[in-house]
Image (tube, rainbow over all chains, first blue to last red; front, side):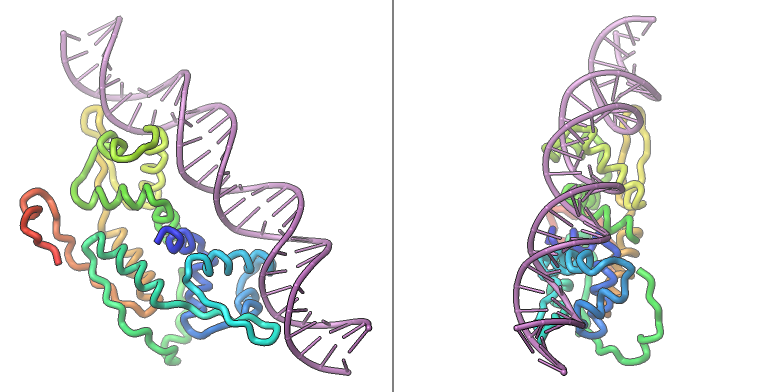
Length: 106
Length: 106
DNA sequence: ACATCATTTCGATAATTAGCTAAATGTCTC
DNA sequence: GAGACATTTAGCTAATTATCGAAATGATGT
């Protein structure tokens, strides 16, 4: 739980997770979305991995990252519950084109 | 929002918020719950204040801290929504004293 | 085999953070 | 006003973190 919150404390990492919600992406694709060097992104990925928030799959010379939604849910859920909030994990909706143009700000 | 997540990234601060959920407490009362020096706790309070997660009221020579539940809710809510989760802020039932022995919360 | 590409690891640095003790501020009681 | 109390501010150190460029790893294409 602590690792999850540590991971979420950085805006870049939160944005990475949001991007991954829409679809799995390679390290390079993700890196292209941010104005930092590759090794920096790689370090961010490592933090997310240690928090168990993403999983990676090596395909050829690329690495595909996937969001582990259930882990994020679990953490948020148990935290919210400690504060008497109810958080119902609605089954992760597919990227259904309607949410697509909505430049969400973090 | 970033300040909120930064604030939540430290276990001590999360615990402070949990304690404050039950009832407002003075700086000293809170400090007594943790094995760190007073100035350290004071710094933690400052972070929580900057994130707007608590408010303070000076009463005599003590300072009473109160959780700003709505701010915490807002942050968690908007974050959860960005991931397609539904988070319903069940009206925070005060677990204070009289409801305490009744198992009032789910 | 060799060059290229995708990604990570290494090694360094600058910025941030949590922690401490000591000192300052403000309030209370006598 | 003097002393005690509650809390914060100041000044410091140690640990952690975000960042970089360069080098290493491993797969692909020629």
